[in-house]
Image (cartoon, rainbow, N blue to C red; front, top):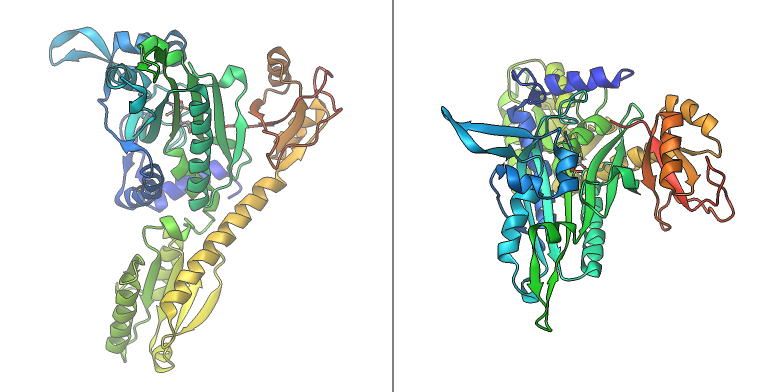
Length: 473
Ligand SMILES: Nc1ncnc2c1ncn2[C@@H]1O[C@H](COS(=O)(=O)NC(=O)[C@@H](N)CS)[C@@H](O)[C@H]1O
């Protein structure tokens, strides 16, 4: 674990999550185990969105003139867009962009769909692959050129307040989703120079990876009326006048999968929160020559009673020694393993081992062990969440002097400081420290220090915000 990057690459291979040998840089193959994990992570996300969003599916390709319509937006993406220039042998008379994100695919259609205030608010999302020609160091699931699991939501409102309210809604959805994954997060308002191209402002979720670097795992953008004016998305108001709509969009990607693997994993392999574990219970029969039949029957019985309670269960009946089965169970990270041998059978007991803390407990097979296991899932989830939140909170150190920043960053800390919020000042802080400002904390954030009377860490002017800075992916 001392070299996180090496550990991370090893676990993706050892646990058969993805195969990065695909012959295009920044693109990998989802292997069966990884694909199942991805499926069980996407599921709760879609459930949250389906409460009041409609799922859609837009084309992959965007006409060049649509992509270019929003000046700031296209400026932000012009170095990252892949282009389609031919259809077969024929050169296309109009280049087609492969979507880096779908604003310019969706908003010309929104302009056709939005007619009256009665149509609003509209809330759509899609889970698609998007493509970005990343020139920085690519890293599987973290910085890829094909973002295979790009969830993008796009909403349309009649008023600024509607869009502001939706930003709060999206933040709530993301918090609930990250809690399901038991990953810790910091929420910051990105500095103005780091917001989404074309957005009024960007709220960003960052998590802390074991190497002390933060990873942006989700962003919520308030787009104001910029794209509405560019793509002429107007609606007839109740007073029969016409006005431009207000919009938001919010996205997350494969990075949330990288976070579950990276933050919860240990030197034995994956450690998965029960709610998203493809395999929640692994039954390992301890078979000797004598009594093998009864043990297997009992294990089958346990398996079917768990499965009839919607607990995803597997049984390892391979004819290999138990130690190898335990090793594989640890590597695959399923939250609970149940061992059952002839002696356990005689006492009508089984041994349960938790993957999160490797604790062993005996259960009485006469008892209601299904409820006990469901109870354990909650304990495991709470334990994993508390562990990683404590680790992150202990890593956030405040300082009043820029001289301490590099020391703290070397010590894998996130630095909290008072900032005046002025752009030039902020950019000088990033230049001096060569560390990114993640952004400012809202007043009600747990990380917001009482700043009345304190001074900006760099320019000495009146401190307006608590800001965070960290080494980032
Ligand atoms: N190259 C990449 N590899 C993996 N994830 C990425 C990559 N680029 C961006 N992301 C993730 O995708 C999220 C959304 O991307 S974004 O540019 O911030 N926002 C959008 O594209 C908006 N259209 C919201 S959907 C980011 O917060 C980040 O977590």
